[in-house]
Length: 415
Image 1 (tube, rainbow, N blue to C red):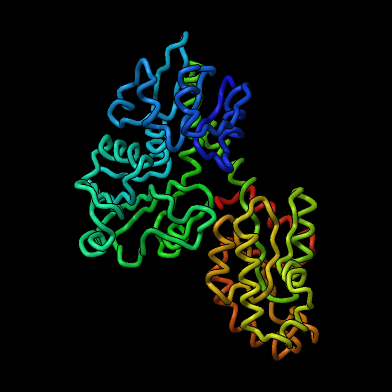
Image 2 (image 1 turned 180 degrees about the vertical axis):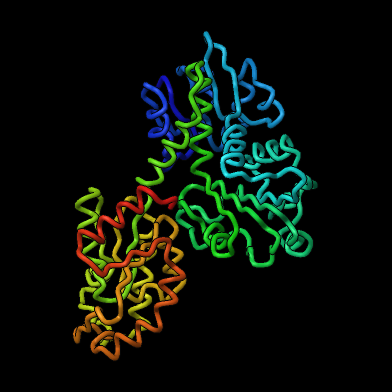
């Protein structure tokens, strides 16, 4: 391996894709077991590597030198082999600093809560001190002299200006979890979660609902990679590359999720988008039918609506956490908040809207079998569609017109 990433368990990583866009080299992902780590570092059979959990501190004894930031943080995520001698850097610092500046989050003289006191918090804390944050409160489940408990945080820190999550709470696959309830933090102006899988954790979804600026960790990941490549290649790369790669990766990873009333055209439009964008199409109602081996009307009749909604929630969770899909939901998927949270985690929610007069009743659909039933559903669900939507598209003209509206919004909008 010449260039690459080492860690004990790498799982799904975007680092290879990012590095190979930034520079003309092959970047390998190399899981290294703890028992093999000492030999790997002693043999030094690499030109340059990035380092992730749990080796950011463990690599230090093998280094001939470290930059000042790495010394202060006591963690290294970038190592360059110079004629057999290893030199360490910390580009997590640069990546987090870039993210704050990119999103115009000013921490100077502000009260900042940092959730977690593990290795991931070290660079974050160093940046906050560098930018002269006013008060820094570290919240951790395991007590240390420098930390407070979550209970104390709720009692004494609800006036915080900025909240930063450095824990793994909310990371895939446990997307239903959140480290903090934001509702009491009424002064909060920004929430940053360094998790990037899913794109929107439960914490960030809640922040957005409360009108708080919400930033995930994907941009930090791309930025720290850019600074690492500069060390690898000993040459500067323009910062515009960070945003180019971030936007490309974000668009590729994100699902497009179609919501709306029965007969509004979700399946038809979803299939057309799938063909044009070369993405897999998933019809959640069809997946549910395949799971229960029964039509939806038959399942309703045999088991009732509650059982149906339970099954619907299962497929929302299953496909919501996947990537690069076009998803058509059932008309009632919005009835449960847990479904919307699952679909928002990696998805852009597109509400296909059509006037009530143009919606068609279908006697085979249990809840929309007549014009009266359609009207009742419309009145009940309209506010739920509106609340869930990231993008609203009026599907009251031709199919081609609707498709072009969606594609143009994706190109032009800051979505």
